[in-house]
Length: 384
Image (spheres, rainbow, N blue to C red):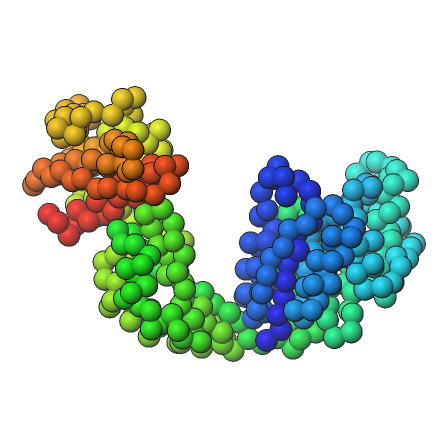
C-alpha cells in the first residue's frame, strides 16, 4: 500500500485562530482508500518552510497532500513553495485564467489582477479545475511520487478530494484494498489497566489494536487492512470478541455511540424518567443530556457545591419537585492535590451514595465527573 503525508498550510492554523478540520477528513479518505497515513504537519505561510516540509515528506512517503495557500494574495505561497521544493519554476496557464474569470462572471464579479496568481502552477503539474471555488488545484508527479495541492476552504477541499483526488489515486496506485477501523468505547477503567489486560493484542500487526485515552474514557481502536470491507470485518470480528471478553461491561459502545445516549437507554427500557442536580460542572451534564431526546426531564445547576452529607437529600428534593423516577446528584469538591466527586443516585428501588477521587489536570475534572455520572446512570440496569 502507498504511504501519504498531509501538510496543512496557514499561519492562522499555527496561531490557533482557526481549527484544522481538513486533516481529519483527508485522513479518513486516505484510510478508506487503503493508503497508509504516516504524518500530519502544519506550516505557516512561508515559502522556505513549506518547501522544506514538502521535501522532508517526499523523503518518507509516496503521496504528499497539501491544503491551503492557493488563494490570490501575497500570503498564499503554496504554488511557489511546491515549485521551489522540486526545483522548477511556476508557469502561467491561460486556460486556468479563463476558468477563473468565467467563475467570477457567474458570481457577477470581475477578478482583480492578483487573481491571476491562481493561474500559475509548478512546471510539469497537471491543473484540475475547481468547480466549487476560484482556486484551481494541481497534481505534480515528481519522480515516483505525487504532490497534490488542495484549497484550504473545507467545502472546496472535500469536494475535490472526493471527486478528483481519490479517483486519481485509485488509478495511479491500482488501489483495491481498504483500511477499516472499529472503535470500542470504554468508561470507568483507566488506560494502564486496559493496557495490562490486552497488551498482547496490541502487538498484533494486522489487525492492529491501539488505545486513545480521554478524561474518564478510553477508546480501543481496531484497524484492519484488507482487500474488501467484508474481509476487513472478518479479521476485526475475532479481535473485537477477545476485547469484549476481557473488558466486559467497561465497553459501553462502538464507533459513533455517545455515552449520554447509551446511558439513557436502560431508563427508556424501564420507562423511567430522570432529573439531574449538579454543582461544579458549569451545567455541562445538564446540557449534554438536554441534547438527547429521551427520559431526561430537567436539571438544576447549583452555584455552590453542597456538603457531601447534603447531596442525597437535595437530590431527592429536586427529584420530587420534577416528579421523576430517578434522581442523580453530582458535586465536585476541590482539594490541594485532588478533586472529590460526590454522587447520589436515587431510583424506585434504592438510594446510593458514592465518592470518586480525581487527581488529574484541574481543567479536565468536570469532564471526568460527567463521565463518571453517565456511567452510573448506564449501570442502573445492572445494579437494580
